[in-house]
Image 1: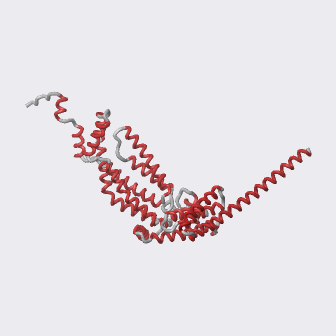
Image 2: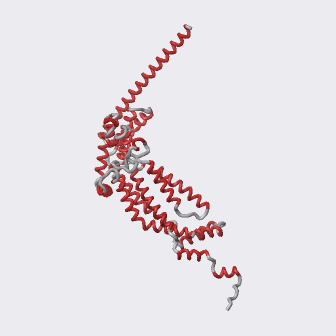
Image 3: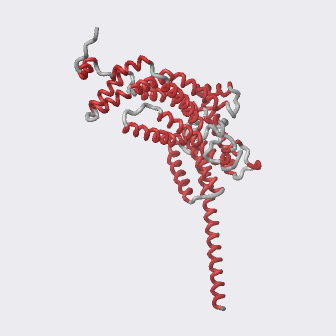
Amino acid sequence: MSRLRTCLTGAIAIALVISLWAARCAAQAEGSLKEQLTRVEAAIEKLPRVPVEKRKEEIKSLNRQLKDLSKAKPAGADANHLAYLEARLLENSSVNPLDNTNYTAASRYRKLIARGGPGSLDGNPPGGQWPDPYIEKAYRNYLALTEKIDKANQSKTVYKVVDYLVRVTGSNENYSYWLAIVIITVVIKLLTTPLSHLQFESMRNLQRLQPRLEKLKRELGDDPREFQRQQWQLMKDHNASPHWGCLALLVQMPFLLLIYQTIRAYEFQFARGDFLWIGSRLAENFDFIAPSLADPDWPLLLLYGFSMYLSTRMSTPAVDKQQAEQQKLMSIMMPAMFVLIFNYFPSAFILYWLVLNVLTTTQQYFMLQKPVPALALEDDEEDLTPAPAAAAASRGPSPRKRK
């Protein structure tokens, strides 16, 4: 019994020594991590004073140090300190206020500030106190950085246009900012409507040609080259070329770039704007909901993907089952691809795409639902009716008419 008691006492003593040793090592590691973060922070703050020829190498060195520190998987205040240093390094690495690194730094500041809880992005953390000094630093740096970027953008025409629309609609954070986007989208849609009309008219003509195309498929199914030649010739003769769709997409590209530059220039003003659930209290509880129109928003992005799926399903009708399967697969793959691409874009940009897609799909629906003109139907019947001589030959000699 005494021997057992001795063993238990020894085991408890060993466990106590091990736990004390582990706690001491953890404290030393924590102290070492804080010291390293402090040293890196001092180097980052000196970066603007480093000569230009040496700055590039210094930035690479600091990036390596931050990556090494992130491998230690810091938690709590150390994790916030590391996130702050990553954003601060990006900010101090840029020379021009409009550099992409400044936009990235502002985005990282916002993510760090959001860790402070509801109201932190507006400078009102819970209880009126910042939970961490580095979150408070991030908020102050974010304000200074965005003011610098916004001031540099104010001379741009696109900035002035959006700012004018916001002011005309009352500068209200609940509706002025998203309403400005809708107004711009409607104007662009009006400018591109004639081309869209030609595109959908070509789609209607292709619908009208479906019986003739199916007949060609049956007759020339064994000769794909001849079928393709006659198919293209028939579509060309009846103004049903699918090239109108490609042309409409190409025309949209300059407007797409213009809108992206516009939202980019006005991004930190859009940070004040809300839209339905965007910027509501839901954003404080769910990370996938954007706190403002300057941040990515998953529900809006999924709505855009669904609208794109509908418009793709309503596109050019298929000639055969194989083409129908290809179009069905495309209607799923394209929205999924665009959703992944636009995942990191501001919700203001996604709102533009969504409104434009809704307007275009509505126009497409009413164009394709219109009845085909009677003359066009008669022309189609003439195409499908055999020539008089051939018809007479197939029936044999016609009977005499009675007087």
